[in-house]
Length: 419
Image (tube, rainbow, N blue to C red; front, side, top):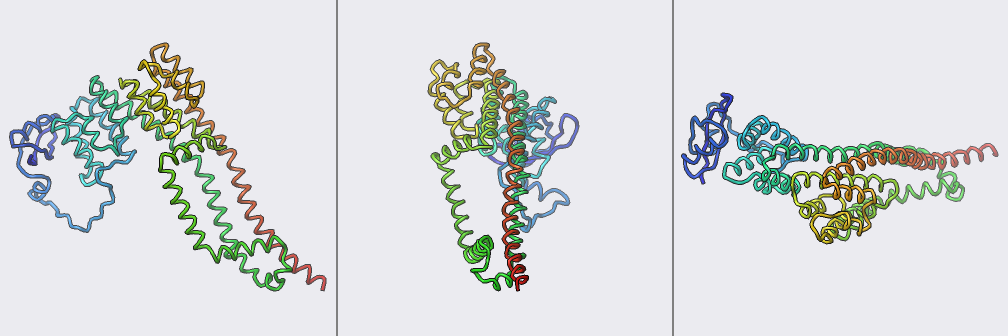
């Protein structure tokens, strides 16, 4: 297939330009018409030819640095794309025209522009929207693709896109809350480390003459510990840094294995202070994802498979896969979930109510809202409890350094008074 550049008129009279892939000029004219435009001029040649022919076109040198990842969208860009696409479709645009409009808004050299242009070309080439999305699995995950596929089958693509926007905003909101909860403790910890480094490298050497006069035997125990720690860190800091880097690398490799992921995620569900946050976030994510899939017509077994892959915790995901295998009639999942003993009774009871009333999405919506509220409460508890712990830890380290130095100074002063 060849590439054709076109000039056309949109429904509102705007002049539009772009490119399409087609077998010949007649097919290119038909492709432009399918985009919802009135073709004015169609010529063979891609963007490079069109740019060279355009008056005043500027040549791009090789010195331009592009930091964008090719064929990639960030989570924020995907959310914006989904929201804008829903707005255009709701306004009456065809899917092809809406994708063309979005593709023209950005630079084709960016990852976002490349993805949207590829989606547009796929639609023009006769692909379904879900199949075009599936070509970018790192941008549009299985939940996104399957919800769009269900929306195409039901003829409610715009409603599905709106639900995807709500789902993504809910997930981003939970992640933002968890990240925000760690800001203050991280600042306190970093300040404590900087103060300790300053005391050990700047303040402590100023008293070295006093320490030398007293001799090792004349120093107080706390001062000897402080000096020994300082000497050890000075002598072996490259080795300690290498050990820390190696341990971090080994931990990341271990956590990436299925066994390590299960062990680490299980630990997070049991660890003091953080277990409430982790569990609430996982259960809320499970309920909102499963609700979105079922509300858009995805079959229950397929929905369980997709949710197990995207729930965000290996332990919960493995339990969902086991529950999926235990499902016998294809509709009831409360019993299989209860057999695993992982999900709380509240979730089991609400799911069972949804099965009895025939409105599982509504029941899961209640579960999601409940655990989102639990997440907010657990974040408050976490920050309230961690704040005094962090302050006490920093004060303990700084206080130890100060007392160790002052003991030595007071020892010298007492000796001078005795003389």
